[in-house]
Each structure stands twice: as C-alpha cells, then as structure tokens.
Image (cartoon, rainbow, N blue to C red; front, side, top):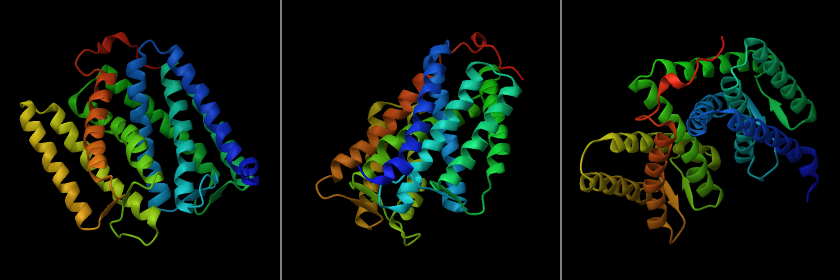
Length: 292
C-alpha cells in the first residue's frame, strides 16, 4: 500500500464513511424509503451537473484522492466523494425536517472540510475559494428542500420528469458509463480536447443525457412493445455508427455486449427510478412539507 493512501486516499474514505452513515440515518428515519432513494438519486444527479460545470468547464479546483495515475480521472473520482457527501446531507435535512439553523451548521461544517482538505494538500483551489462552499451549500440545501416540497405538495409532469432525468443520470452514469471507462471497455473520443479522460467525459455528457431523454420518452410512449423494440434497434444502429466513425471506442469483442448494456441498462434504470419515485401511486399528501 503506497504512502499516498495514508496522506490522500484515507481522507476521502473517511468522507465516504460519514456520508454512508448520514445516508443510513436518512433511510432509517424516512417513512417512504423507496421514494427517498429515488429523490436522493435525483439530487445526486443534479449535483453532478453543478460539479461538471465547476470541474470541467471552469476548472475551479482539483481533487487528489490518488486512486489512479490519470490526473483528470482521479479528480473526477475525488469529485464523486464530494457529491455523495453533500447530496446525502441535503436529503437528511429534508427527511428530518431540520430548520435553517441546521443548514447554517452544515454549511460551516463543509466550509471547514474544504479548508482542511486544502491545507492537507489533497484538494487544490484554482479560482475557487473556501467561503464559496459556505454560501454554496446553504443555497444548495435550500433549493433541495424547495424541490422536495414542490415535488410532493404541488406535483406536475415537468417537475416529475426533471426529477426522473437526474435520478437516471446519477445511477446510469456511475453504474454504466464510469464503470466501463475505468475497465477500459468503452471510451468516448469526440476530439473536443487532447486529454483522453476530459475528452471522454465531454463526450459522455452529450451521449448520456440524449440516451436518457430517449429512454424516458420511449418508456412513457404508449405504443406496442414491437414499436419500442424498433426504436431501440435504431438507437443501437446509431451507436454502431459512432464506433465506425471513431467517436466511440469499444474494446475488441465487446461491441454487442456494450451496446446491449447501454440500451437495456439506461432503459432499465429509467423504469427502476420511476418505480422508486412511484409516479402513478404516490399519495403526495402523506408526506408533510419540510420546515422553513
């Protein structure tokens, strides 16, 4: 075990452990665990979008968990620990119906964690500053609270589809796109940037959302299964064209398997997250609105 495990990785594992503890409390205390899991996935997915803007687009900071020698991929993996943590805490506040003073306390806690990680040299600011985290988590957790309240008390098709999209984005991105990338089986290479990992991430952020939108549309489209199968076949053909054009690399011998994993995986996760959120049966009045 290298020295970097005890200087870098261990701190990220500690953050993950506290996040797992928080999430455990969330599911113990939640009276509607399936719905809470679906909502947490949606919050996690929305957090990914925020972090993508900060990490990939604006180069706000860099994480150093030292899990891989690929610097950008290492930063992305470190980012997962952060996203997991803040998403779990925000949902904890919703489930326990905590007041704004708790929001202040958690915001200060994340500010201190930010400062600690910088001082330890396992996280580096570029233009970002620690006090942005202080203000950012306060606003972020407030928005999560309002999102949850609106979803339950004033449900509408748009807010539901918004929630479903981000839930699938989180679980499909981690279980399919990231896993296949780390295994070297599927890598996007659109040629946007020279760095391979950045280029992959940029390509996946186009591919993933488009496939999710198509799967959601197909799932709610009231047609026979043979028609849906035909549409899925068209999607598979487009994927084959991406491979033929060199925009998508798939390890030799894996093409058919990966195409099936992508299509059936994304569609399957769409069905699963919809079942968690329970769009057809959830009684919105069962759950009290959160404290303001």
